[in-house]
Image 1: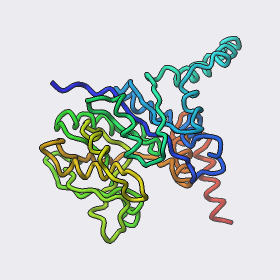
Image 2: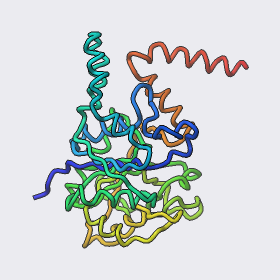
Image 3: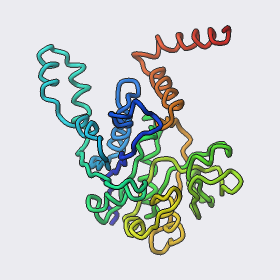
Image 4: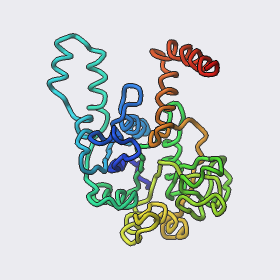
Length: 299
């Protein structure tokens, strides 16, 4: 009998160098996207998919992540005295989201190494991995579909996004075969950040994975790859070629709204898009954006 997946792993040990100097003393995952840090969107996505046991892989100077999901008794007491129940509810949301756990990555040896650090917590059961740079719009289903496919196929599942071939060098690229299910493909190979000319497809791997526990043993024996780091992509390539031993790897093609907060320009776009869609901000922001865009064209 297949057990329901309850554990999510969120690697969050990166240095955030693309956002310096803002990330000199603050984790990049704590950068606000409107009025919530980016990492909270990711944890909320996991919880909404039924993953209530969340392990965050952190590093040095990442204490703010733990503090954000912890109680702040003084702040709560102050808001309660003021009768500001709306703000108190927002503060308590992050505290009560999930059963949060933390482990440090230690040596910065890449995503594969970070995922391997979750082995003792996850144990011998499938689990999800969510990368903090990707925010999936709460109105679009992805992780739930991936969890369903994992149970159905007893395999590892990755999220795929069709991108412009000129951009494939920014991602891991998947070689795929079609299946009978729409937007589900079997992955036969993967290449980390290939040049356009040698990419097996324009299907890019984005930051959502549902993995069988065999990945831990494979990662333990995966040598450093591109960039001198242990690449999760290399371990997935091994699993894709060992269907009998690992169940293989399948991809769910995502066609919804995704916001990349790991790039400065895309981060700004994400803030604007999410704010524009909100009932409390959108009605005032959207007309201003139209006016501002028109003014830019005149200038």
